[in-house]
Image (cartoon, rainbow, N blue to C red):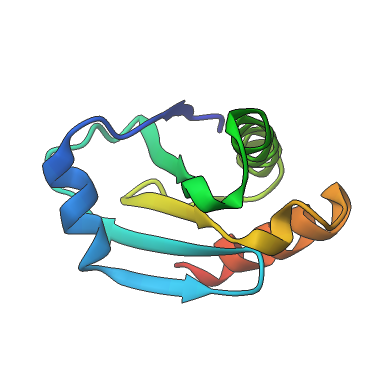
Length: 113
């Protein structure tokens, strides 16, 4: 079942996610936690790219790539919609290929159950 992907908007949600569990690898860090106020039909996920990774063009490219990968993941694998997710990109994500990043992101979200 396809769920609508919705970005987190409240500062409290971001702060509470940072206190939750996390999975880290060479491309990104994923924070996840159950948020009680969220809708059951939506997949709450936000992407954060730090300023030191590059100018606005590079940062937006990273976010577009991650959003596109998550749309594919939403179609191909089952993602736990009970959690809210925060994906923080790392420096290696600019240098490597799309397929490598996609494969690792899929395996990380399969681990979260």
